[in-house]
Length: 505
Ligand SMILES: Cc1cc2nc3c(=O)[nH]c(=O)nc-3n(C[C@H](O)[C@H](O)[C@H](O)COP(=O)(O)OP(=O)(O)OC[C@H]3O[C@@H](n4cnc5c(N)ncnc54)[C@H](O)[C@@H]3O)c2cc1C
Image (cartoon, rainbow, N blue to C red; front, side, top):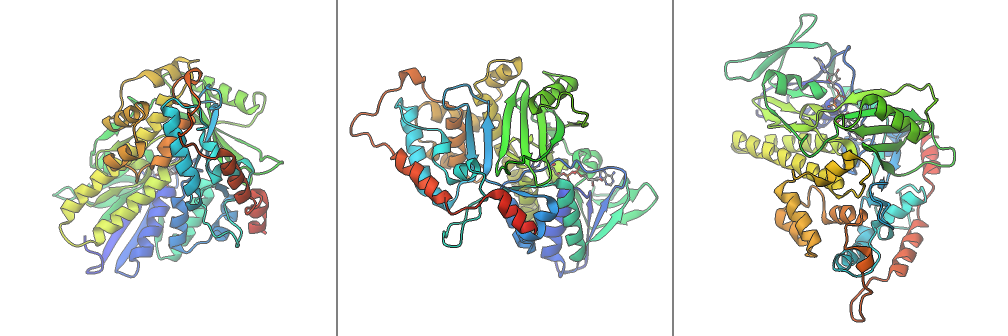
């Protein structure tokens, strides 16, 4: 596959968020280099449409396309996200809830104090170690502020977004077509392959043959080309990620203000997300069918939301959790749900979509042996998936609930990767976690800050009854000073609802 030397036709199958993200990134990069891009989507099969939260990487996606927040957020009912609050996952006093922030440059002081306190607490000292006290994003979320600093406060705050996935898809579809992407409707029923195994064309229900030089499989959980036609094996994560279903219900917006965080609340057999959009709240209970039925899950979700007698309909979804063994096979790349899925606890799916496409573009554009690069690309994507999986598994492993079989099974299974085992051993033996993460080379997936937040957030420290006051000579952070710093920094940010309203005006 050589970009620019000869005309090339890329066919993307699927018009969900993954398909349109791929179309935009590929068209933006290659449209002037003899590459024609067609996106084909089924008019009968809808999109999954529930991906409503992102990491900060989505900001760079829109930036690359030259689309400002004010151009897309109002159209997609989007809001800002400072991070995720985890509630009800631990019953340890002071750790019933914690905030996982997106850390920014301004957090340098708070972060080193946090790491220092985590180390002290792990070694038996009675010091504050809930991440809420140390990061600016936690304060912005607490006060429902938007993460956009005033002009005189020269610090960029990392943030993600919440959005209506259907509207983002439509907006990206229009943008891709402006970049020259051809948009076709049709349901693929056949995949035609050549002698060497490469895909030559897809055939639609109404008898059309759509040929291409390269195919991007964005057909969702069906994984029409990579898994079904090419037979690439799917590696399930069910041994250590039990959740395989979700039930989704909207609620009205909060008249008192707009949260700038996702809230993840642990329930009896899973957890529920609460995502504030401009026109509604998205709520979804992610649970395991091994431990409760869809009816029980819906009942519990309705109870949690105060909707037991409400006629609003719930949507039930199945999730296939795991990854394909290789995302790039022959002349086909799987992107989005067709490449795999890890439950949405950290809202990483679109992040992985973006990194997959961006890394693919980089590999294709480099010189040298494409086959060798394809192998290392596949290994890299697999490593990212397994890294995200380990971080999510760690949430479940560290939960301190004992009220149901679900939580007990999550806390006690022995299906941990060697990487996660080493991280936990390091934490519980009081050694340096930053060094362990550097040793493993996994900081690009989740940095030390995230691991500290998770482990400290759930209160994974020695028994509080046995903690001792730091002796004179043991350095401790000036917590009152950090509280003051955080709250004074927050004076430079404005009310989230107001910022969004002005953007939409
Ligand atoms: C419960 C749940 C919660 C989630 N929450 C988040 C979140 O907070 N953050 C996040 O980043 N991600 C989240 N995700 C993941 C996110 O929704 C997806 O990664 C994202 O929407 C991309 O989906 P997709 O485009 O791969 O697939 P889909 O949206 O399913 O799109 C598939 C496309 O393929 C087409 N298609 C299928 N078969 C054919 C065929 N035979 N012929 C032609 N076209 C076909 C369909 O028409 C459709 O256009 C969540 C997922 C689930 C299940």
